[in-house]
Image (tube, rainbow, N blue to C red):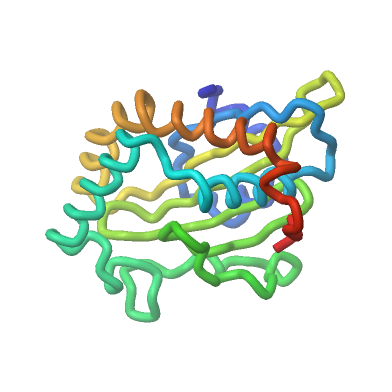
Length: 205
């Protein structure tokens, strides 16, 4: 479910020091019944496993197919618009303090156009950049007050000028009505099915 921006900004996340010039666009919470304080890695691994085995709903796949088609047509996702050495923006990996630099920092995330920033026991961040936006998906593991935990995903952005701002405004209805609800169902189901999804899989990978 969608929750207030303050649910992210009031937490002592390390991402605040890494991306203070980014705007928090959306914050969503995903339930994880029976979870404990050290289960973020398990939750993320279950999500990755679910996404690799089960396709997104047809409408979500259609929306992303249209987005990638438009990106290819207008060059939104060309390397010079991204995080490459000659890209439009510098990676936030360059801002990471020594204690957050990890072997996986800057490596591509399989299946999605993001790269890894860092992962801690209760916090994980990945980033992307294209012609429309420089963005971060931040995952936080937060106690719910009843002895359990939930995953909170915050989307942080720096829009690329008026075009980027207009693009983000145009896709907002699709995010709220289609993409995020489908993501919520898939991610919460992944947690419930984690034993099956992660059978024989190292959740730390």
